[in-house]
Amino acid sequence: MLKDTKNWSYFVNNDQSGFLYNLNPDFHIIMEEDTQDRHEILAYSLDCIRKNLSWINLNFNYRNITIDYTLGNHLDGARALIVAPHLSSLYDIDPKNRTGRLTYYSFKKDSLDYHLNRLIVDSDLYLPRETTQYLTSRIEESIVFFDNPNEEKIISDNIFTLFPDIHEVVIPSEEEIENYISIVSMDIKDQSSNNSHYLKLILTENKLGKFINKHKKELLSYNTD
Image (tube, rainbow, N blue to C red; front, side, top):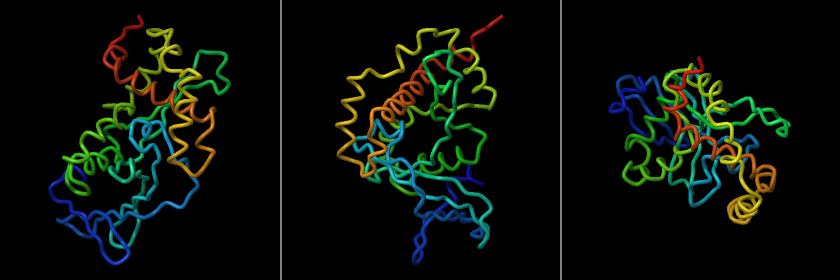
């Protein structure tokens, strides 16, 4: 149904807005503000001019029954809307990493979230694509798209063998961190999103996502035998 992009439309009705499946309007997606306490800046918002983002709930409804839901983000001053990607992780070989893992953002192409995201960003359904295409392409530079679930495991298994010096590439310098602290301070209200520990985390996630995308073909074809 979500792949049928030509038969969806955006609607505003009283205090509700969302997306309607024109061939069967009983199926619709309601957009509403998310009231949970969440970070204002994430790895994939760092490549926007305005670094902060906001959160919305995307509720999949059949008639008046919510059958599923996911989260979305308005980015760059609401100049773009995407479905919030999922957090993936690698088991880190660096003993100095107390968490034991490195994280980055991803979509799996067989998922509901992926197909909803494509419906939104690849069409004029919500915002004119000609005005959002460049921005969404920048955002997606740090998000990894997996063709199938097995690709995530292959990359996790191979990345430190193939690139043993990856930490030198993806871990930001103190200078980078301090620079971003001053940049994001203008865009956020919640200071928990603007400290050196958190900025180091999301800068690493941003760099790691871009690194995996750059070397994805090599990582997936690497033979460990």
